[in-house]
Image (cartoon, rainbow over all chains, first blue to last red):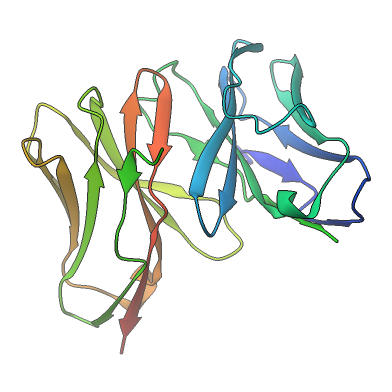
Amino acid sequence: DAGVIQSPRHEVTEMGQEVTLRCKLISGHNSLFWYRQTMMRGLELLIYFNNNVPIDDSGMPEDRFSAKMPNASFSTLKIQPSEPRDSAVYFCASSSSHRGLDGYTFGSGTRLTVV
Amino acid sequence: DQQVKQNSPSLSVQEGRISILNCDYTNSMFDYFLWYKKYPAEGPTFLISISSIKDKNEDGRFTVFLNKSAKHLSLHIVPSQPGDSAVYFCAARYDYKLSFGAGTTVTVRA
């Protein structure tokens, strides 16, 4: 199994541009989490999907952020328009159980820089 | 509101000695605690966990201790090895949600 795959690995964009981050889950996993890592706040949960349905998006910072899960194996996180304060590493993670008893499997992350 | 706190941003330890990483939490509803390890340019990987009904869990060189009354847990690595140099995140679970600390960077000196 290739694990959780995120693309791109690095993204540099200008302020105001749209950014789309992508995530492919591990086959058979049905829970998907998007996290953002910053120096100040560590890992913050942005949104959680279970069986393709968004369950908790309370961590999404603003309306500029949106996430979709069009099928059981793929998710996107979109920022439109992007701002310099969005610069961070964005991780997605998947789990085979609703309660994450086996721990989450994280992707390698997308490092986003907004200039 | 940070419900999980790792107050030491960094730790330096000599190879072969013990590394002790600390974590404090505020939410008494957390029922499961986990430690993740992260190398540069990689995602966090699961290391060890403990249920809230236990006070100790051991896996090889790694032991996690939980003190519920103090809302404190710690990770002990004995003996520390150069490959242990990484960022360690403490995490706590309530229902489906994992809340993470800010991480502690461990450097193991030869």
